[in-house]
Length: 78
Figure (cartoon, rainbow, N blue to C red):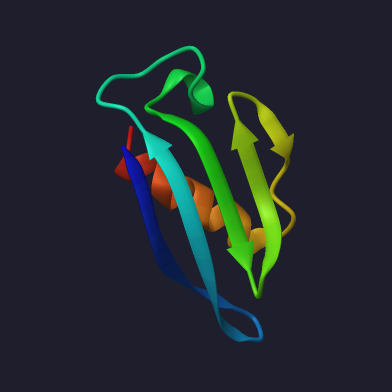
């Protein structure tokens, strides 16, 4: 159910690591991101939350690295 990991994202300045903590179900739900399997997701860079979804978007993606990490995770757990 809970997944945790890190994604290395290339940036204009070099590379950044986005850590993620996700609650993923076997099937999609209207509580999930875009009706998908991820119902809770937190992305962090350097200890700073750059995205948070807890059955609804609390903090939108704060930068391009967060947007890329979100897209990767959405593809991974669609």
